[in-house]
Amino acid sequence: MANAGAVFRQGELVERPAPRNASTLHAYLLALKEHGFDAAPVPVGLTDDGRERLTFIPGDVPLPPYPDWAMTRSALEAAGSLLRRLHEASAAVVVDPQIEWPRDFADPEGGTMLCHNDLCPDNVVFRDGRPVALIDFDFAAPGRPLWDVAMTARYWVPMNDPTSAAAAYPAGLDVPTRLRILADSYGLAPQDRAELPRVIEQATDVCRAFVAARVADKDPAFLQALTERGGWERWDRLQTWLADNRETFKTALLR
Image (tube, rainbow, N blue to C red; front, side):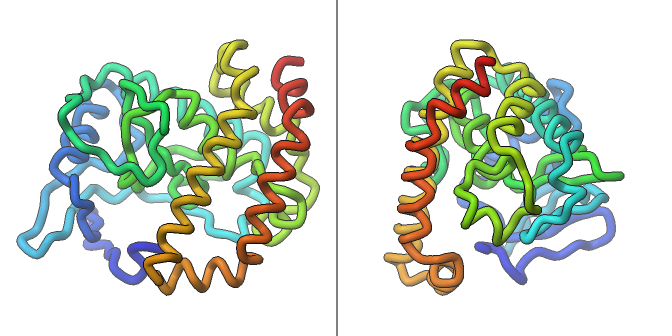
């Protein structure tokens, strides 16, 4: 939404508006590659007019309403494994505590490992129905690995009430089962599984605050999206649904 109409492919490169922390973010992406994570764009440089150039990753990127092939069990398992690979490489990257990172989707409890924080299907490249790479690291910031799992679960399970999910996802997705599949494919530890439903609620609060800030700033894209997706009533319904089903989710995760 933020960069609509402003991203272009030029042969093997992608040119897009550079985030404010582009230099730091580019150093992080290069460090990921050095630590063996080859499933992200490689930064090439910055232009004089404030744009960034990164390598183009060929494949398909699903957009809502998400097609069936993006929501299969195998796609979900591959997404969980890909997130784990990212975290293993990211954990080896030293984060300078003096550097300021975006706070929009950042873990409010902080952390020492850089998280992606926006791993929706729209930011994942597929080939042959399987997630193979991650893009758009603009919201990366230090946090807990569990926070990134929670943010990913919001979009991939999805952790969304049935009325809201119907507008963007295929029918018949079993939320508790898919949450367990994501945790299994990531390799989530038992103590983190017990905490995951609460952290998903916490992540939902942060995402709602992000939308509220954009709406307060009169951002036309977010004003339109809020209206089309049911307004604040949808957020109220979602947060009530998450709280009401917290124990069901925990049981599925620990089963």
